[in-house]
Length: 431
Image (cartoon, rainbow, N blue to C red; front, side, top):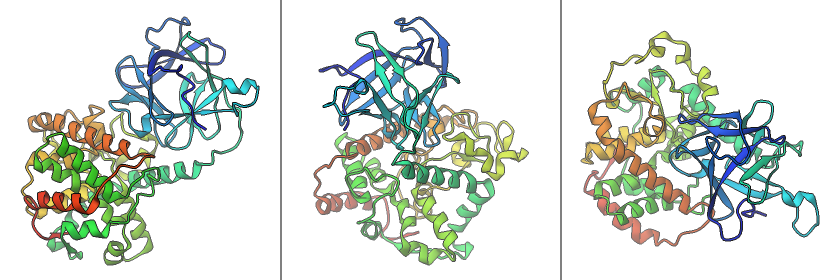
């Protein structure tokens, strides 16, 4: 069972410190989002202050003194550089014992991550990481102290399989997305490549995905198409222009690459089908042909990429020029990048600002981590806020259907949204 055992009854947030079991060291976040241990005075909230905020469903999030959220990444790394409190930035407060028993364990709780691991304060390394073993914490009344008690359960989490699947996916994407690979994939989108292109309307693409559910987000209480429709409706309700609403509906159509129908017509081997599915699932991007930024998710996978040790791509600007503009750069081959290329070659009339929202919302190192500033043009800097606004709205919709259902007349709402898309996109696209 889950409970908000960190917070007192009626509280929505409070200030706290995280400390090791011996109480000698506190944990703080730097302005860059790194986390470190330091010797501090108990009860003095200075650099080690965290704001704990209670959310619905027994979830809490932690905000640093620099206004960034604690985030548990799939590889077990913990950072504090996120602008938002999304699924990776939320933790379930799980009791360590049945509250009907009279046990000291009743004072303990674990902080369970989205990936099924547990937040753990390592007393030796003086930092926070994630572990598959349960790591209990306890609080000390009104002192504002939250103390990690170590590890008490020497067995893997029951949800470790889910976490392994996500790590395998992220590792595979980091490995295959070299500069040459992406250049080849972009080239295959043209008629001269000889690769088969499937003609399909947006309406039929939606129908093809009507029963699809993402295997990496099993806690969503809706299908993928319902999520896209709700994303577009939420943007419309906020008063965004129709072309932004259209992008809200279109941005997730890269999941077509996960369907057997597509794979059978485009892939010659099982390995190619698996690769295509990983591409369709991916919504995390970076610039290929340039150095990996320090803020990239799961940096331990960087060395798997062929470009990691290639001097052409490891110098300051990689193979690009200073301030060349992100439009001139190749990005990792993901589902959104695939949809962007389809629309770009389909002569759609969505404004450049809208296509930027589609292409760059997965580019988190740029719009959240402040990476690639030396590659950006003035145009990139002007549209940054629009990309951030779109990504923030998209994430808010995603949170609204995590473990809870939203009412939706799918057929009615989809019909109206397709009419909006029809203003900017022709009757058929080549996928």
